[in-house]
Amino acid sequence: MGIADVTRDDVLRTLAEYDDLGGEAFLAKYRFKPARSYVLLHDGRRYDSKAIVGVAHRHVNGQALGSGDFSGGAATVVPVLTRLGFHVEVSPAGDGPTDPGLTARLLVSPAFGSAESRRHWEDTLDRTVPFTEAQYADKLTADQLRRLNELHPDGRSRFWGATSGHDGKMADVTTGDVVLFTGKNHVRAVGEVGAIFRNSSFADVMWPPKDGGESWHTVYSLRQFAPAEIPYATLSELLGYKPNFQYPGQLVLSGERARAGIDGLLITTSTALEEAGAETPPGVVREMPVERQHTRSTTVERAAQQLLFNRDESALVIEFCGSLTGVTVNRFSSAAGICDIYLNGPGGRELIEAKGRVERGYVREALAQLLDYVRYAPDPVGRLAGLFPQPLAPKERDLLHHYGIDVIHRVAPGAFERLPAPDGARERVRGLWEGGER
Image 1: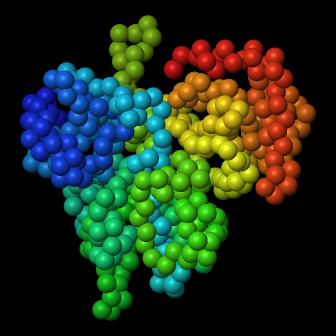
Image 2: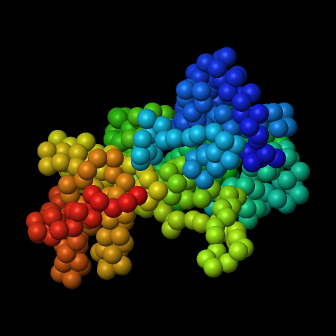
Image 3: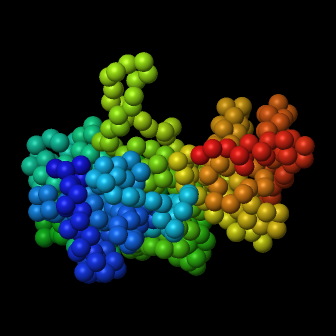
C-alpha cells in the first residue's frame, strides 16, 4: 500500500496529531523536514504536506512512511491531497522556484583509500547489484524491497553504506541527499542517495565482514552515480575548510555548507527536479486526455534528463565564480530544471548557463535552457549569458547575440572575457524573458 491509499479521514486524524504536538515536534518525531515548496491549508492553518501524507499512511496499515520512503511534490503528494478535497499551495519559503541545496544534505564518504574499501567499491559502485535475486531479496523486508523497486524498477542499483558507529550521523539522511565518494586526495565520484535503511544481513551479502570484523549497518542505494576527479583543495575551498584538510572520516553536512558544496559543484539530483515539477518521480503515472477520443491513455512524462554532475562544466563554473567580486551567486530550481548560475551584482541580476564545449549543438542547448529558465527566475533578470571554456566561432557567437545573450569565455586560468550582445537585440528579446507564461 502506498500514499494513494490514504483517505481524507486519515489526513484529518494526522492533522489533529500535528496540532496536538506542534509542528516542530511532529516533524522531529517522524523525521521529516519542513515543507520547502508545498503546504496544506486547513481551517486557516498551514501544514507540511509531505509529512502529513507520510504519517497519515499509518492509519492505512499501521505504519507511517518516512521521508525517504516516497517522493514529495507536485506529481505525488499534491494530487493525493487535492483528490481528497484539501487545498495545497506553494509555501512562502519556497514561493516560485526553490533552491536545490537548501535542505539536501551532503555526505563526504571515504570509499577508495584502503584495499578493503576499494574491493567494496569494485563490488557495489563499479557495478550494479541485482537486488531482486534471491540471495539479496531474501534479506530485505517487504517495505525495503518495495522502496528499492520504486526507485530502481529494473531491479538493479549501486549501493554503499556505513557501520553502526555512524548511526547518529546517518539518522536524518534521506532520498535526494548527495554523497561525495573520496579517496587518494580526490572526490572520486558523486552520487544521489536513493532508498536508505538499516539492514546488516543485507549488507553482509554485499560486503562480507572479515573474521571478527564489523558489519555495515546503514545501507543506501544510489539513484545516480557519476565518476569525478575533484581535488580536496577544490572541495575544501567550497566548504570553507583549510586547503590541506584530508577528510579522514564520514561527514554529513547540512544547511549552508551543504548547499555551498552542492551548488558549487553544479550537482543536479533527480529528487530536486521532481520536487520542482521538472520530472515525474519513478512509479508515478499520469492520465492524459487523447484528442478526439473518448478514451484516456496512461503515460509517464519525464523531462529531458539533466546530468547529476558534469566534470567539465563544474570546473568551469568554479573557476568563473572564483573570478567574480561584489556579486552574490546562487542557483534556483523550477519546472524547467536547475540553472547553473543566478547572480546578483552591481549590474543587476543575471542568468548564466555553462557548457563544457563550444560546438553548435552545445551552444543551441545553452540558448534553449536560458530562454526556458529565465521564465522562472525569482526576480527580473537583466542579462542572459552563455559561459564557455574557449571562444566561440563567429557563427555560434552570432546565434547567441541575435537573441540578446552575452558570450563569456575563458581566456586564461582564472580570467574570462565577456562579449556583450548588442543592446538592441537584448531589448528586443527581453520582452520574451519577462512576459513568458510559466
